[in-house]
Length: 405
Ligand code: PLP
Image: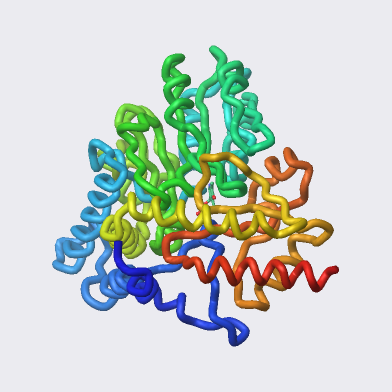
């Protein structure tokens, strides 16, 4: 792995100051910062070869189309999908899940059917299913979690029923950091012929994701959480599903032949890419994935485990600090509360010290309710963070406690 100072130099924003203090960015679960090579790749599109994709006969359109399709190939290889036809570009995880919830619901779900999600889910993996359940008069069932913030596997098995149409679970909890045993969840669902969608928004950037090995039916992630641009994401779907599912949007690029009587649809993956896509974003995402591969995904996972261990040691020594989410299988995220101090106050004071953390429910209100709390302070680290930054966080938290004592 590159030296940490070299890595940080790849991310110009990390050397800025806020309130005249060096920025300590610990909100990587919300969005990650972007290396220069990603910014350059996006800029390059607009400076050198911008043309709408798959449309023109001219050189500019050809060059952009080629770069866009190359980005699709980078994504395919990054997640080890077997074919490029299985990679659909979307606006992000939310866009991917909404599309599947709509399309899958239209094709397969009937009154009285059941959709299974877990208590750990981000709203993006709850609300689209709820909306579909309302439309179809189906039921949303919830896998409970234990006090460590882990799903209770036996309860999951009990909830799988002949009426279960799909299981939709997160790979990693954004609120608590728990790594969910998605491989086992998928095996159990598949033994009953139930497909599984995995929300990879917090999983893809923290190690190696192999959809072939995982054997998920659908996988969703966002570019901006893996050092890529905003407004671009991916939906992976097994070819057999994508062939059967109806498109969720109509318009340009997704059609084969249009008459007023009937429209036939384009081949995969274009059947699901209606209208002008965010091709500059896709090209930037391709660059981000190449950057991550260049650093090394195993190396990233190892470094983040070291950061987590260091932060756990530092923070668990602070009196009055309670951590939520204590699974031994966690990404480098720590959700906590300080005794008698509101999470917003903690977050606001840390901010004034130049430390960016997330406060609130983290778009996961049901799991907050499970723990009987209104929210937490969430520290989400990634490989460009340093041990010094964690020390500064520890000192900052102690300052917050002092101010309120
Ligand atoms: N799922 C999880 C687990 C997330 O953490 C997030 C964002 O924080 C999302 C879905 C939604 O991602 P986006 O807003 O990029 O669509």
